[in-house]
Length: 357
Image 1 (cartoon, rainbow, N blue to C red):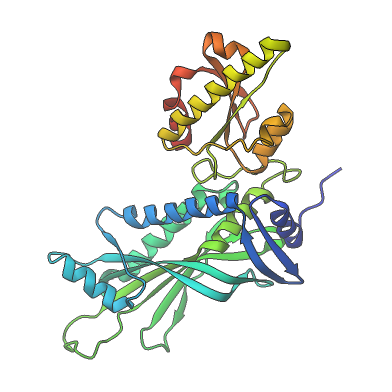
Image 2 (image 1 turned 180 degrees about the vertical axis):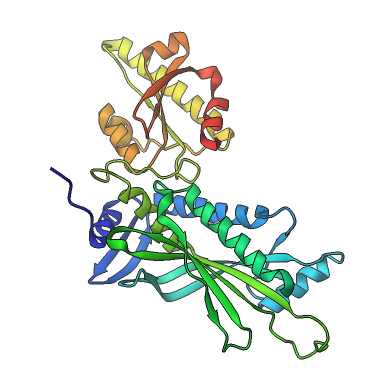
């Protein structure tokens, strides 16, 4: 019997049941969105990837960090003052805190955000190359979104929109994702316009143009979660968020087998010590490791695995008594549920390669 297709309401409810965020759903209004600590880690990772894209999107277009207390022209002037030999094009990356914003989720739903972060990168360039730059940037942004997706085919570039009546003759385009019920969700908004006239420009001097790409961080986090949950065939039992942006890259579980009495106590202490050592080694390699809060460690082995799948941990290190004698452990993949045998001496280099492959 075929599984009934999810509706947009079903998908939002799945997001609300997840361990990443909370909100109230009032008909078509998503209100009071709150990120859990795990959800905040996901948002932080997406923020870092946005900054990484901004600083490396093009080898020939340098991007500088702007100041939120300056307007756009002041930021451009400040960058040019600090970099005397700087030539066009270049970009300025900024973030703004917005309050009580209404952010659309498709044509039907509205996300009400009491407080949110707006990410923006604005490029200053000669108007003669503006259209080509906008074309290249929108393709790069689409690929950026596809990298993180369970279903890369859901992302597309909208039709180009022209506002010829505006003074700056604005051209805009969006990166969108299509979810259930054919709901189209705008993710990135790219806009090309002429640089505002400061009143001192010589008439014969050619105008410069600005290309601005904006993104709402909370909507981005929700979209990534929606993508991971809609991609599940059955339930929210496993959230397959891309390993590079997953809040935790790995976890460590040890299991006692057929031990009793004093031997069990000694074995458990040795495995616990080994786990702590491996945590230190992995964190030193800048891999986030899931914390055992005490309650987690007392859960049955299969419950621990299920808990880790629900928060999208891509890899789990499985230790047992034999690990203490042979140095061999099993490395379980969230996506395949299969485990391979590796030696502890291969950590963390092997895991780093898997995460960043």
